Image (cartoon, rainbow, N blue to C red; front, side):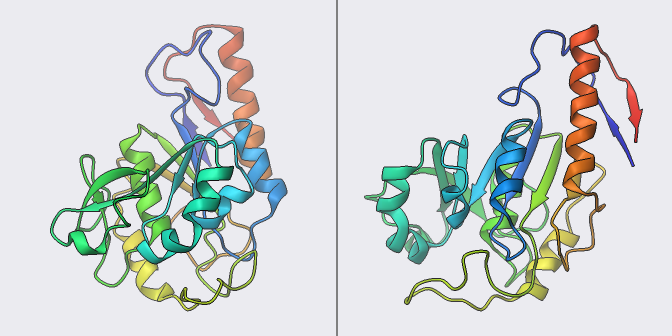
Length: 231
């Protein structure tokens, strides 16, 4: 497995708030609080849907579903310290979360792959908050994105959603959306403990976080430009 330190001077500026390495945390049943907290120390974190409860001090949170916000908005507002994002569907505004909710709304459209100006919904029938949160990371400047909790089968780490929210998901359609991401433009590594999402390189979280420690040591030791590190 090979990664890059990108073509810029990192000396003296390394920290998780500035590095272009993001982790998107979805709510698959394999997710653990230990993993969710560990990535906060070395990456920027986008919590998806309920996972904000595991990382309430993360910088970003994303949820697209209007009905999810209808149930959870007040809890997120009271307990999450970062910025919460959602869709702004310009073509179908009735699908957006209620305007009374204080959220950062990203212009969104139906398209495959990752958009740089718009959040893309993904393949028809395969739109989901996890995919869109990956797109948000791309818009925010991510060069590498780690995935946690992207099981793509089973239930959630917390069990079922409360009444009024759907518990079944079209995982096969979700996977098709991810398969259409152009991986020549961004590095995505799936660190999920158990996953049916096989279109991205797999790596254990311990190995990736260990690599980031090596990078940090190199950066603090001297100015770094375009060094290739193999693990």
